[in-house]
Length: 179
Image (cartoon, rainbow, N blue to C red; front, side, top):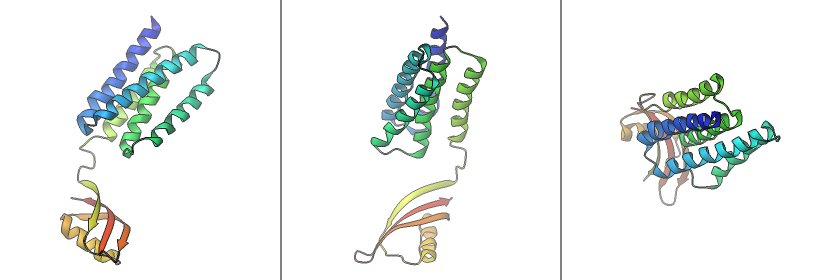
């Protein structure tokens, strides 16, 4: 019965994280499946490991192995990496613990709350990031910054020139700006 409570707590946490926070903000259906699959897979595996004599060391090793798997697939943004780790952590906390203790419940709630706050659309809402391909070759960063501020009608807060092509007269730049 206690294990069913652990599974239920994990399901509530991952559902809240995935359907209540991630999907309404980012709308990537493919990652919804990934977060759910990773979470349930880690939950099941860690519950089996937690009930055997293997120990937590193997569970943490599993966490490390699973965390690098996503690096071999399609590129995802940094905030999506955070959701992946949260899905992994929720499954591990629930599965290795075996019971819903106040500490485990609080940690699961903390993970969901931190991602809710840290990825909130109201947080730093004026800041944007964009990769821009410009039809002029800029070798002077100050001139490029002024040109981008004019184009974007915003203050450039960070600028990185990725590529300048003098033959085709283009510049590729990564720009972060505040509206």
